[in-house]
Image 1: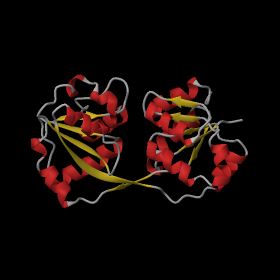
Image 2 (image 1 turned 90 degrees about the vertical axis):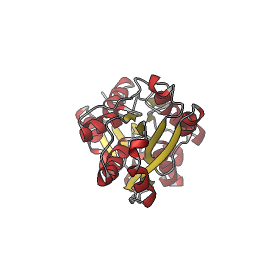
Image 3 (image 1 turned 30 degrees about the vertical axis):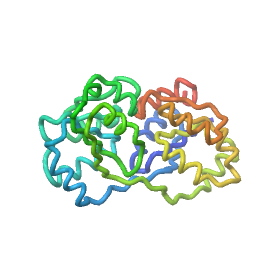
Image 4 (image 1 turned 90 degrees about the horizontal axis):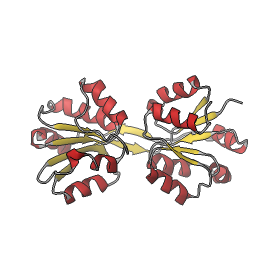
Length: 254
């Protein structure tokens, strides 16, 4: 029987992973539990963008931050040549390369999260450095707080919003009831939270028994706290290649 892998990524970002799962012999089931909406260009954002030359480092939190952040920046100005660009993961680094034709200056070599970025040499001596974090509304404060503890001056540029999509659960319920989901790929804490809220109560016990493919220990901890009793597997990062490699490693795909 072909293993069915459920993808919870936003619909517009699920295509390449879906194709990779199919190529690897699986069946991709698209069930987006997160929707990304670009934020309006506010007066506050315009003020921040017009002061880009004052920043020593710009950090892009995610590929969405790269896409929507650069859209807003390009509407107002150009990126200062001397400002260093940083990303948390390879997906964001690839997005920077696609948009700008160059790799970011600072990318973790392992631990593709805020902690990994904070561990890089470039983020150690940041006293009096001005740092801009490009992200979605909300999210963790750990990166900003740690950089400020190290003496940096940190600002945010919020360029997108996360929402919970309206989605039919009929196929999802049927697959859960028949034990027909081999694994669920979850690449953000918000996606996991929304999945739990979207899942009808009558099939929640079945959901909590489905193996999860996650991207960091923080989401593992959240899943355990939510009551998952299934196997929780962790990919090295959120890239399609890393996810496919991990699915194969644990025989969730052939």
